[in-house]
Image 1 (cartoon, rainbow, N blue to C red):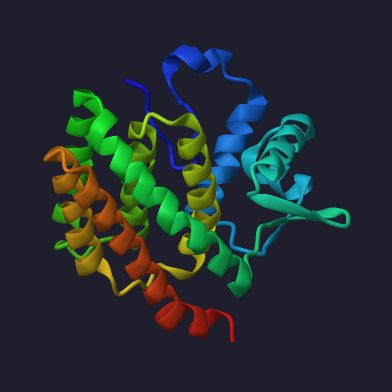
Image 2: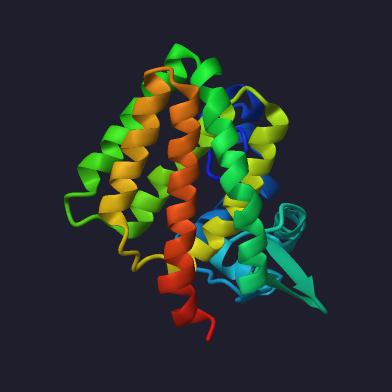
Length: 235
């Protein structure tokens, strides 16, 4: 079964082949992305080919190609001669959430109708893992990863490639912010309950309920960010 990554990229064996056939530039892309998602590279931090060459133990050519791909995906931006991990302003966060709330609600609606049995089984497993970890002094980054997998699966389950692509693109942008400023999130219990509600609605084949649950979840997250997170990091 194809693995859905947080970035929305397809990491199935059919497309990437064996480990020996993976291009160095793709390996470099994955390694840099992991450094960002794990918090080793922070929002707004500058990165250079020389720095990455030393850390990844690769030549500059695949690293340069990986950085260009990351720029195309909106993960890094070029400022003069240097690249920075993308920095989102408060206004950009507002703009992203304005459309993200509705797109994810729409994805949940269609996923309820179009998800395959295998996807539904995977969705249930991810939701159960989130619920289990949420009561065990959870690592926020681990929970963020699982949350990302759940939302990416719902987007894929919508059966609409354009909707999936845009949902994943927006989530990727926010994923970088999330690793930087969300690690002290006080919404663990709420996230657990909201993910359970979304999953239950999808599995019970109630598209309207699933859409409403997803919209409520996304709205609650954004309200928390505006009231609790943004004031601490943007003022």
